[in-house]
Image 1: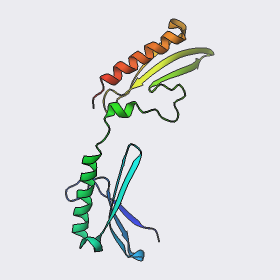
Image 2: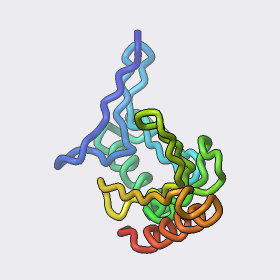
Image 3: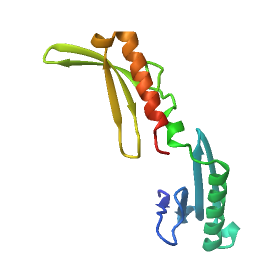
Image 4: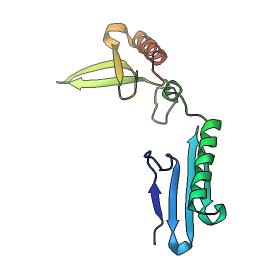
Length: 154
């Protein structure tokens, strides 16, 4: 039988995100599981109803532990998150990509800068290799990206 995991929401009386209810009757396992990941490091701890003295006490201890972890390891700012080099980055420069498009048989090459000025919004600016040359188009895209990242709302 699979374990039951109830993800808690943000409604009144519910545990915060990162605290989940675990009920596995066939294993006599009941409690709250705390999970948090920061900078690739994972933190987790289980608060058993039995060991904590009941469901309410286990929930309270789990929430307190989660709050303590969040205080000790705060979230990255959007700006810092935007500057992480990711696996698929072939050029080695975050947010700047070499783009090649073929439209009606004609090939267009450009460097494109991408950033997110606010949550839910994406800005892109492209610089033509034909107009500026490869090196200058890259430099302009990099400059646009850096300017955009500096103006990002955290």
